[in-house]
Image (cartoon, rainbow, N blue to C red; front, side, top):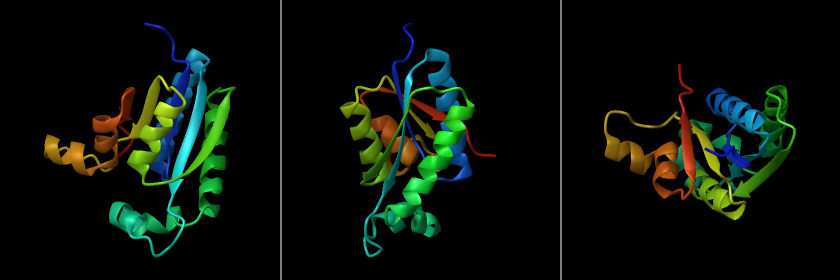
Length: 150
């Protein structure tokens, strides 16, 4: 199997998603690949998409200022993992669409996300209604769902 050239990872700034960044960083470092760290944001507080998807954590993605702080922390963790080529992206969209579209735009080899929100009680519920499940269902590239909880 050829080494990965471009790895995309999504983060919302949570400790769980930063663990996915750590894993993506390790993979990118081992492969000497470019790592693209992405976070989505909703530009207006009255946009209910963030609240619907994230509940009480929706404040973290309203407006773009928190996004830059999230990306800085994720970049620092990726550098600590040995990644040399890092690109940061803020994307105005819901997480599933943002990450799937970005992975396609940059011709990524791998898309990495954490497993938080993946409902393991029902395969159908987990694939359709969770961010990692939605990404796994819609992505046209390899997806790694990292066990980041607990």
